[in-house]
Length: 458
Image 1 (tube, one colour):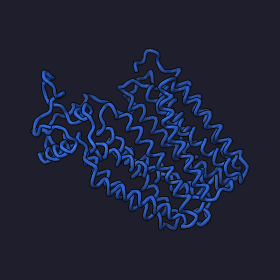
Image 2 (cartoon, helix red, strand yellow):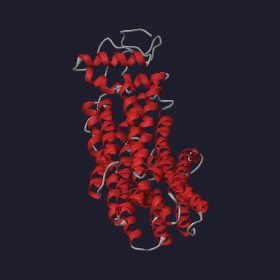
Image 3 (cartoon, helix red, strand yellow):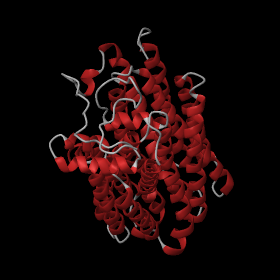
């Protein structure tokens, strides 16, 4: 490595003149151990995120009984987390572009440690609602920061792979939560699952504090006006075994007259966009209900907390497999066809979970696992459908709009689930209700695909 040079686009004789930005250099260069370490920290933090999101669902059966509250009242606390996630992802995550990725990630992880610790000693539903809302805000912003960080420290050859690994970490966190619930909640109480989540986030915070680096793109932008940022950038480049800069590196020009939001989506795709949003919303109403209330449903069916936790391990473990499987299958066939198949099988598995008689432990665990596998697979397929629906110029916006609508469904699903369970409908009819609405998502996807212009570029 040559120190104090301004790297060219490609280090070879006769290459094009002019320096290359740190982001472009990272994309073109083999990855160092330090970049792998940063990605590993992000995956660990995302696993902690996955654990944090579902802690309340495992604690719910015990808390509802111990506090003597209705499922409807507890449903409000369950919905507070996805509402906070939506708020944090939209309004808090942009702070990373102003103060940097590293400071915001550290603040979020540190605050999560405090919030989860406080949740372990909460004694009233209102306190729980406030803490879960605040936890959701932190989680929503953290998810965005982790995705961006992994992307910025990965080269082109491995970027998509590591983004997939990052999202697998979320399911792994849910699986870990199920295992911890099986071991901890019955002997030590519901508080123990939040203590465990506090510990995992504390470990993530400590490791991130010592290993996580600031974004090279952020430091390059700061170096234009702040000389100290150039020194920090060169220190980072040394850790990644890449050439240093003797002057501020170039910053990619921002596109002129760049529009935002729905305005960038062509009119020819607006109907399809609305249909994709409907599909995402309906899917997440159903999936949000399943995620929030599955442990309670299994408890009502006769599973104690140990077996409930085992069901969580198998359910989220199946989700990890589904992420990878759908990614492989999607390369060989139609994304819409795969999404329709998985949505249909999700509805069937939901109904089967509702139909299993009380006390049939292994049948309940099997159908719970099936519902997790097909539900996660349907989500992955839905994301792939959306990504491939748009051309490269509006792909991020289209996916962002669909996921935003999905967040709303994740808020409504747990609330509706609380009212449905509290109404005394019975397990089968509750599960059948949330299974049947998936027909709307299936129809929306099929029509959206039919509405896509045939001449739309990929």
